[in-house]
Length: 307
Image 1 (cartoon, rainbow, N blue to C red):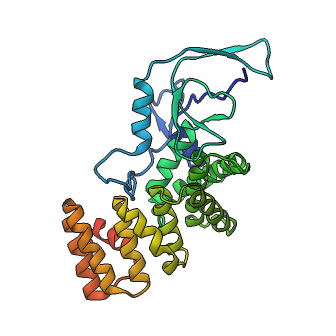
Image 2 (cartoon, one colour):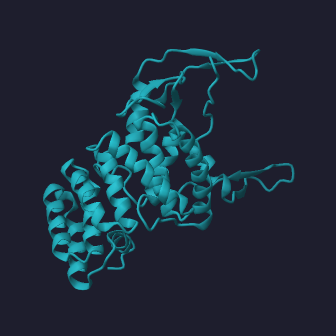
């Protein structure tokens, strides 16, 4: 059995590797070493679960499920080092790489043939979503942003390789799609716009009614200039109950200067999610007063107490 990479460090460390470490002296004595500590990631701006803001993110749910499952201890040897072996006794998030048209995540210590351990990538993608799911992205520090950008380039390359086969799985394609959308939002290159469109088209062909695909395709089209093309996909996501699809649709109608449709969508959002009433009321107030054209910038202004 081929030895699979085992994650031994938290993804946060990988993200922040490009950031400046902060030296902290524990003791001024000359024989005491200087201890370096890395800054923690700043809080997410966008909700980590766009389907339901009050629910935990999907990645954390999957980790809990993995931890609750019985573990089948596995011992594997490496092709590179035939004389060495390693024991795997912690469940990871494993997805099929080919021939699967719906999400088929499972929990096991090691991926087998035509599978991949996606734990590390999912951990990172969740963190990026909190910063760059929509445009503009939100970072509190330039060094932090550079760290995310560097890691995202690496992750997109890994996912592009997995997604290259024509029979690449839904689980691979949806992650490759999300990664390229966020790379585009971080202005990492025009190629990511092209790739995101290609991945979206493959996913829509594979599963035309998938709520997650329709949500991501809808808002990515809208924020990339395809506002009219985005409408049917955002409508499907709303009908499927994706909470953030309402805000994306509102944003889309504002881009199109369809104020009445934007306000109607916000009113429906308030009915469906009454806990968001205060947010809706402020958005409605700003739209009626100034006709602002970006919901996410409005939310940023609210968070900063600018109005």
